[in-house]
Length: 205
Image 1 (cartoon, rainbow, N blue to C red):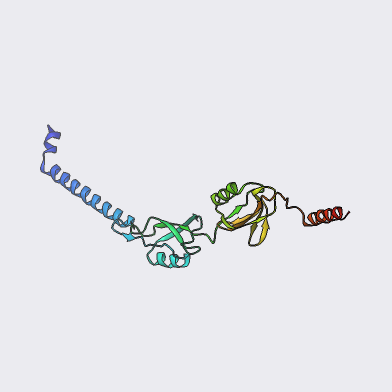
Image 2: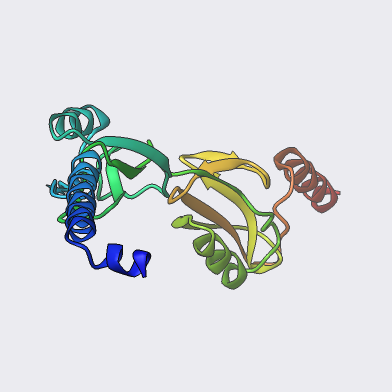
């Protein structure tokens, strides 16, 4: 009975109320501390960094107490300046906390280089789609004497003959030199001249 009377005594009830009030105060203070330490009420709107150089990005984010990290370089996009921001995470307009890191993808300095495939003696219908599919453009198409019609005899870039395995920038123009199907084989020029001289001697004889 002594314990039962103590539980319902005025002294115990006062201590219980004080303990509950102390617990509420401690919980309130703890929540306030968490709000302060985690910046729950702080909202910084992420700016649009597209097309900005890294110098401008650095100045802009530093003024907003934000940081950045470069993820990687994307495929070259001619619509964006070189070394400018192409993509960012989080996206513009989202709200973040102070010191949040913005992840950036940059535009490289130019197109990557692509290996020239072996297309000699392939037909024009085979060569053109192959070159376009890997990123090249078709330039001038010229013909020279050869037994095969539209067979690829040479590949050229800016006037220079190129070989299979050479590397050129993506979107480079490749000129095609094709056979005209005339029935004559376009071999070594000296050999052709020698054959012509021999034929002339036979005719004179």
